[in-house]
Image (cartoon, rainbow, N blue to C red; front, side, top):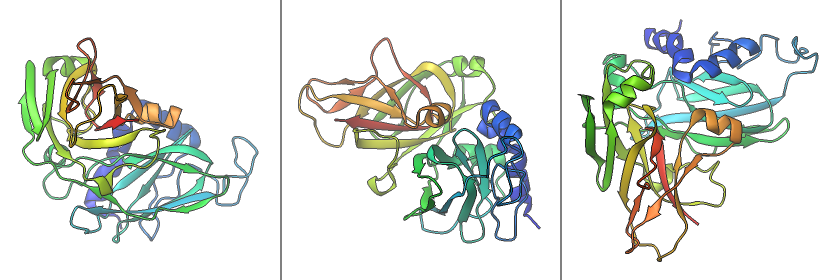
Length: 301
């Protein structure tokens, strides 16, 4: 029988993935039955090998296998993982942190947790204590892809909140973020489990950097946030100290993990950035900003 934690998280998956994901999963007949391995088969109501009832075509034969650990290498069980392209498929990690998605169509897809580990602390505390990974994976026709390294969930220490009004924080060393908490509250519903606006961040070490959806950009630094996916269009003003100075005139940008943009375009969302004259600081323009608190990448090419 699925654990109480798994049932709580699965009940909230559609809210965490957003309305579009819920509509796509519904239209594709996404299953929420967990098999004996702790994994779900994905988005089709047809048995494996049967004809797709909606299109008359045989189901896709691709598959994806991966693992999820915490920062200490301990597997994270009962975590719903979303693989989203034209449809979203949900697979739940087993006791070894393993997940498997079957009947995967070819193409670029977003891969991220649908929620964070809840445990005994409760969802409201979990969403300010954990951040998420995010990557773009690309499968070929009928490819059986086994990811070579586990994804790692990071905890965030010292998230501050609940916040109101104008804020200027340093959620991670060398990262300054300004925003209007009231504008976030006015923009729409908060992410699942959030009780007010809280913000914290952790730097992502190079071994945990994403590998897909980057184009020809090279990552200089990366950060993950909690609460994950607070949203205010152009609302986050950012100044980030780079680990090493760039040459004057280097081409730079911020890349932002954006779930909807990711599965529609197959890339991170590129945002404008300004390099300081001494090449040590990357900032958003005066008339711009980043849209959401997910994962931010400072990049150059």
